[in-house]
Image (cartoon, rainbow, N blue to C red; front, side):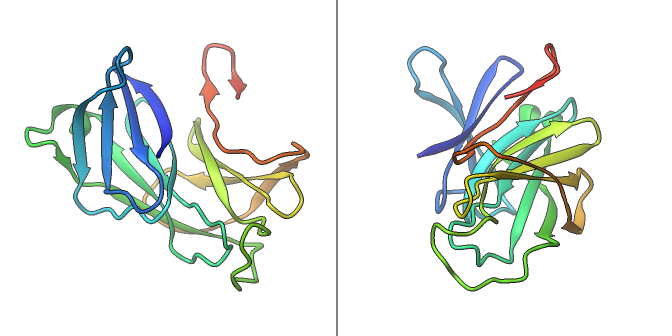
Length: 178
């Protein structure tokens, strides 16, 4: 199951959802065939949900959390130049780890948590995570620095979306979040 998607340097790039290999796949935009696979050698795909980029980095969000019990949420950050120019289709990622400052309950509760996420965007100097709130059908928005490290992140806003957010992107041309 492909879970995230970006268009970068004329390439359509995706990844598998939970339990897949730590690989980014380039797809032919007409046939859908895989034309290249790039392994992230120091990554694990626990539950990769989305991918985004800025002018320097690709960010892979490993933060799927359907049960609300995960304590190993992370973002893998790859230099675009490393990704595009690797001679052996293998790259190493920087790692950004985080937790939600307002999550105090980690007891598994499938499809009722407000700490699952499937959408991430890059905007200015931050990454913004949009939660998939099973409990109330809102989305909470959290800001996360783009710099490797360990962070406890705070909610910056909430939106009554009356549904479950499963992807997102920022359109620089229209200054719009979709």
